[in-house]
Length: 85
Image (cartoon, rainbow, N blue to C red):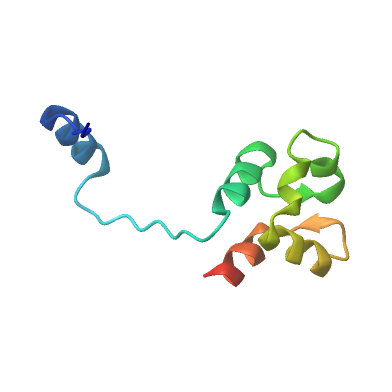
């Protein structure tokens, strides 16, 4: 079975996005950083994440490396993303 987007839906998406190009940078487990930012905002304390249902995300390799570099208890997602690109 092949899923095909209807032409009217495609045109709606194009109209919403406009003519500009949109770049989405992706790396392995990027969803983890996106989810943490969405849930906690920009200033994320490691203790807040560890006490939340999202604590398992800290086991992702990209976040684990950031944890070892953060001596102040703050998870810097900008650094995580920069190191992955």
